[in-house]
Image (cartoon, rainbow, N blue to C red; front, side, top):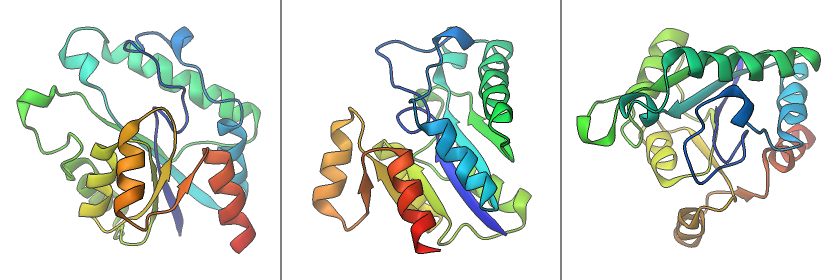
Length: 177
């Protein structure tokens, strides 16, 4: 089974200054959905993971988050693709739960549900918290350079591959096969 894990903000969706609280505010990068469709056509099962602290803060309801995910699924369906699963942590940072990245609980839950080790599974991220969670389960971390300065810090300190977009990484990955 070929599996790939994608963070959402900065990888699939454009990052915004404020919390995304409606499906209308969800703006995928122009090439990210096609990249996901290419991965799907090449046999990858695609899992999306994210921290969603807006739920704990009362800025985002579960229904609104489901609407955002439904919009993403509908757009992917038009391209002949689908997601295997979408997993998220609804907690605020000060709740100190195990599922909020950088802690690996969300990924450990995924590992258990899939009955598959995530060691060496590509995990495409754009923040330090996602990076730390991926390292904790020995995933093959790939960084997407968006507006986050932490990516530059990680890139300078590690040999983790960095790409300009999910599409650029997808092109590289599929050429290697």
